[in-house]
Figure 1 (spheres, helix red, strand yellow):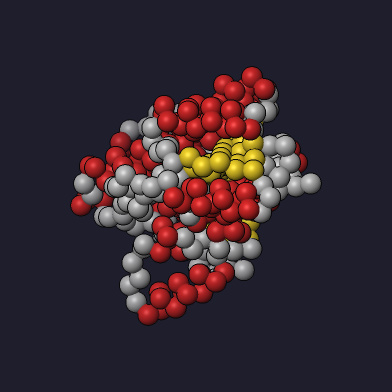
Figure 2: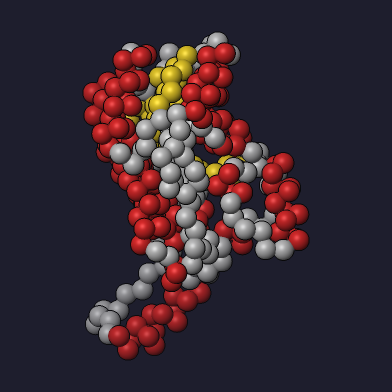
Length: 305
């Protein structure tokens, strides 16, 4: 008996990388799985293929599990709604959604074409809306449901060249938080994971020098998609029912809980503030508590465990 026995789980972006490992593990843990993947390229600029999703579904079935494939885009609300109907028709229910589907169109913000901004927002943020909004009424009615959405340290901390990706992923954080707050009375949970894993998305980021290349080789061995899948699947299980509204990261064999934005220091002036008094008094007093402009590598400067 696995931790997801009797559950029906939809996994998006499941033809490769983290999504694939989540789907395979969910199947091994007893879930009936809808394996969704558009089957497109990393930039999401082609029509895709049903092949990758069906191949993963076949792997699950070959191992004795239950799975069907779906090759629709999470950016299409009607298609997402139909995918959930497929889950209910094929397996008689729906209990969890794992949503790592994504694309990348990196570039410096001052050179970013509007279409690259929109494409990434559509898949990551609008896609997260689609998979949650199209299923949440079902979850609330049955008073049971779990969302595992995916954020990124690009949004939580920041990475140069990923303004579109960072904006979308920080938006997913806010969405998950509100879903969790509104779902407390109905046992509808939502958590997010910032994954560190060697996938085709990460592999697309340019390597600038020999030191970076050596670090990449170490990361390939120590940060794997299957490690992220362990937490994603665990969060769908009944044993995690008291966990909701949280931000996690998985980095190799490390699991992190992130804090969430809260005030770090406050100042009051009884007579009120003016631009001049803010410049002369408030900003210098607060400066010691500023967050620096370091990228995620400055927060995680060491090799993963």
